[in-house]
Image 1 (tube, rainbow, N blue to C red):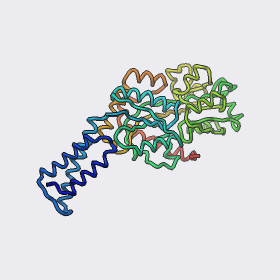
Image 2: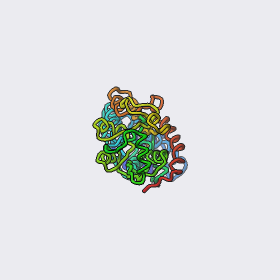
Image 3: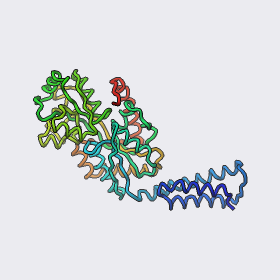
Image 4: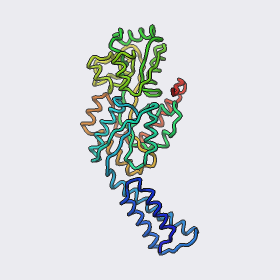
Length: 373
């Protein structure tokens, strides 16, 4: 005879887990826990240590079996990939390429959903609060998962409230200007900015985003002051540049290559020590007259803290295989993305890399007094 307390606890635990939509595997696992108690042939009364020991052992078995059952059936329905920044920006573009590649590996659709606001903190909070069952994953980058911790009062911890899945790729910026800008090379642009700095509008994707921090570093490097104009994403900022509403924008090739080729904007240099394969005629900052001014930022995948390790492993496997597929690689390389090598695509490598980036950049950001507006 199973003691009432144990049976009632099983029932309550089952009801609690209905929200995970895993009823069959949970029910089977709880049955195993109940049978374990029955097989021990223990009739337990009161609240003694033996009763607590039996409950603890039984539910340890149940939880272990639930985790295994989840991994075996995962994914059984579409997955949502949360993008914490706006449509049309590099994070959004990269997310859609990676989601398609991972979907083909997993055999289930990954639906991309943009949840924007406050430099990506709204979307990141959604990821942190999501049920840790593998059906909500998030793409993030240097701004959302490093810089924001030094700028915003966050409702989540960047290192403690997420499980890393893997690094994707890194990319530099273009130094771009509106089409009507009189300067035709970077040296001329710098001279124009030094003369017109107080009247110059420089766009960015929101406080604390890579384009914002890069813009401030650019301002410091050339020794002048701009009016910084925030937008809700790189796509929106790029449209403002095309329309001539801002003068200058540090923007990723993923967003700007099409506009460069169409002649809608001027681009003067790439903020990297090497030229880009997709824009071989574009000089580096070293070549164009601003030596040593480099800025690149990266993207990666995370899931909520507590996501079972087996599911994290499946997602990592899907990411690694997607990044190895010719179709995904071709799309990312066409966006001037430098895919991380295989040994850096593990969850452990992402965790270590993210911590090293926090250690490097938080002092710089705080010293620059960058604050949420």
